[in-house]
Structures are given as C-alpha cells and as structure tokens.
Image 1 (tube, rainbow, N blue to C red):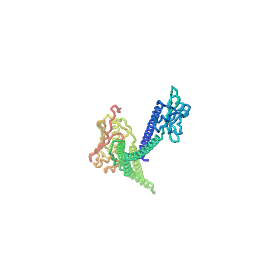
Image 2: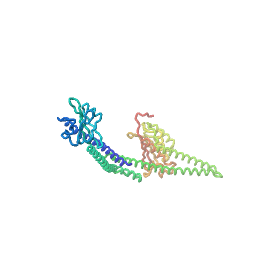
Image 3: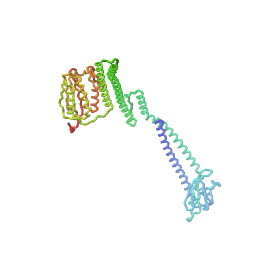
Image 4: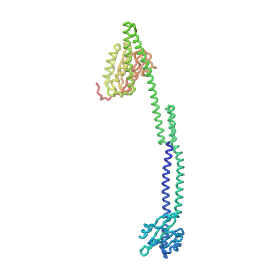
Length: 466
C-alpha cells in the first residue's frame, strides 16, 4: 500500500470518526430537546387540568376539550389502579403505568415514562391529584411519539448520507492533496533511480519550495550525493592505483624471476657448466633474490600504509636522530662528503622508526645519484609550528616534467632507470610522512642536484630531549 493511499485513508478515517461523533451528538441533542418539548407540553396540560376549578376525576373527557390539544390522550385513574375516566380519542385503550410509577405518584410526585404500543410509542406523564394533603388519584397525559420518531429517523438518514458523501468528497480531495504533497518525493525517487542507472553522481535534485521536511530531505539527499561522488571518485582512483600497482609489481617481478629461472636452467645443465660460470649464476641468484626480498618488503610497507595502519605520535628528538643518520651515511658513502648542519635540539611529533625509515630512503636516494666526490648535506630548521629536515645532494637533478611524478609508485625517471631500485622508496616516504600528519617536498635543478625536505609538527617544548 502506497504512502499516498495510506495518508488518504487516514484523513478519511479521521474525518469519518469526527462526523460520526458529531452526528451522534446532534442526534442525541435533537432527540432530547424534542422529547423535552413534548414533555413540557404534557406537564402544562396536566397542570391546567388539575388546577381548574371544576376538575373531576370522573369527567375528564369534558374538561380535556378546554385545557388540552386534540392529539393529547388523557386518562384518570384511582389509587387502586382502576380507570376513572378517559378521553374519547383513547377509545378502549388504557394508558399504562408501571408499578414503580404508581408508587411514585402515591407519594405525591410526578412520573414520566415512554411506553410501546401496537400503534407506536407514547410519552406518558402521570401527575398525582392531591386533595387536603392526600393523593386521591392520578391524571395521565400522553402523546404519540410517532412524529418525533419519524423526524429522528429522517435526521439519522440525512446525517448518514451526508457523512458518507462528505467522506467520499474528502477522500478525493485528500487523494489529490497528498499526491501534490508527495510529488517532490516522487521526483527525488526518480532522480535516485536515474543516478543509480547512469552512475552519474553529478546530478542533483531540483527542489523549489519551502524549507520543510521535504526541503530538508532534498538538501540532505544532495549532500549525500556530494559525499557519494567524492567517495566514488576516491574508490575509482584507488582502483586505478591498485591496477597500476599490480601491473607495475608484475613487471618488476618478471625480470628477477626470469633471471632466476634462467640461472637455475644453467645450473641444471648436463654436462654441468664450468666453475666460474656456476659461481656467476649463483651470485646472480643471490642478487635477484635480495632484490625480490626488498621489493616484497617495500610492497608490504605500502600495503600497511594503504590499510591505514596508525603510527605512534610521540615526541621524537631530532638531533640524536640526525646524528644517527649522518653516522650511517658516512659508512654507506665513504666516497662522498657527508655534512650535517644546524642540528637543532628540538623534537617533532611522530613515529621515530617511521621517520628514520623515511630519512634512510632519502639518504639512499641521494647516495645513489651523487657521484663519488660529490657532497650530501643534512640540515634542520624551524618553520613556525613545524620542524624541517632537509637532505641536499649534488647529483644530476630531476627533470621538471618528472618532478610531479617522483612520489608515484614504481615511477623512475629516465636518468634513473639503470638503477637497481624498484621505484617504491619515495612513494613509501610520502605515505609514512603523511601518516604522521607531515609533508614532504622536493626542489631540483638539472645538473645542480636536488633537495628533499621533510616537514613535521613540532612537539611540545617540554618534551624530554636526549
């Protein structure tokens, strides 16, 4: 059942209940008022009869012509219940009185009751006749309720037919109004279906109206579409990056695996190859195996970064870390001049192991492209709320068209393709620094070298520095 139909039925049911309640109240009021008017008429006629000077229980028919209307039935009875006299319009019919009513009248009080006869209902008013403080008889005044009942029956039919007609009319009006009220929702539904079919998250719901619940729904729906578009594009980019990663990893794995497979074939030759060739093949196997291990390790680091694995955030003293990096650099590159400048006694907020891995990646990159006799400089500086750690080399530099891509996975500029790396080092460095809420940037000029700068938030000045 649609919301439109449910709303229409709800409106119609509420109105029908209200009309039923109003009709019942109106019917009861009309019945009470008209019955009261008849009773008041009977009371007045009885009082005029009893109050007349020539009132006689045994001559009531004569007196009724002067004090009662022709449609009024009058009867007098004695205390023993026998009929004393009655009007001619009663014929042989005797107005009844209940035992309870007779006892009430004997105590000097009036009594009114509705009795049913073969000719219809009668309203009977019984008034005691009191003489010298004693009840000597009872005057009964009655009228037929046929006209009263007929009026009430007509009224009930009118009320029923009118209520039914008004309910039907309101059903149609409510159907039209609910359709108009729900039209924006149908528009939102159609837009959602079109977006789902077309996968076009740039579409929006065009709503022109008051900022009511439907307006808020349209606004919320458009905001949700904006978030979906961003999430969809992010998912697309992640999927494309994953595809590139798989393709590049496959390409990088193919070369060492092919070399390993070829050397294994040489070692299995019969007759066997000579000792010098066998040693060369084994050396190639070791080198390519180490290369595979490094590649797998780098891919594992990237996978953990992609999974959003949180890093520690704690004060990391910069000076001892830079001293450690400088010491390792001098061991790894004895043919280069290693200089460490401005080793500030400050701390950054981050993960020491991850930061050290980043600096080693940048140092290895500088050693790889700085020729013997060249120089590599490590320096630190403060930039407002951040600390900058820079590594400068005197290598061949990076071409301007390659700079925007050097942090991409498996990317290697033309001048670096002869190297042994897989193009993952700088990508790993960027992922680790961003995971510590920092940034990494590069400046380079062809023929003059490059400068990689790591920028991290400065830790609290009260942090313990060692």
